[in-house]
Length: 352
Image (cartoon, rainbow, N blue to C red):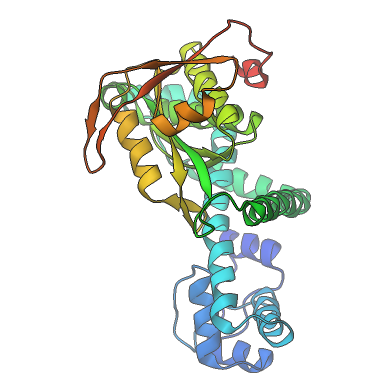
């Protein structure tokens, strides 16, 4: 079994992972005192390609990870399935994080004149070799500073998640099988026609701007961005008042941004099922269908949200005609508006 040639990729791998790959699956399994099958399961759970047992591709860092998982199973109440599920959670999140950060650095290091030479119609979404190598070098130089920050942010979000779980457990006013949430969708208007007119780079800039601005608005009011899918953001909040502020501020923020088209927001309240960091259920479907019938630049809510806001000052609800929502049935939506024109300073205005 021969070692891989020393090249730029191998040097980057060694700097990030420590010593170069020296072990196959059988060797790493033996060193960690686990079965080859357990090693294969962990590698798969972490989102990496399954390789032949004899292929030399495992490093000391891989051995350390395998030992840690083995100790986690042995020294805690977690069984192997639970430990592997934890590994998958890290893998899915880390994969998206790594790709996202790599792309950000590559875009940052791409010279403006290079983009101009390529031309708008052929704007590249993949950096050239020089930019790619410079990006890799910069990321490696920054990794020791970024790693503690990542752990800190994870701990903060873990604290918030535990706090929400405990709050749900204390709430005895509803069925404990599923928490109550206000679910909202923010949808960019005429996005399909924009896609036909924009270059890939322009489209990427627009989508990134939308995600940044939407995330700023949602998190300012204590909400959670569940996911973004191009022209749409899904968010949740446990409080109807704060969710209403999110919906109205999203419309205002997008409407005042020169780069983005108008947005429409639909919100519904009810039970949700939370799995894999996502939310599912009838409430989510109702919010999605409601968004589809909401006019541009406006916020429609279902009767549950309207009822919750009915006793609060600062908002007004205007009853709309009944609508039939596919897969949901007939509902009476309400248009949400502010009852006063006063607004606080908004942190996301700094991006304008």
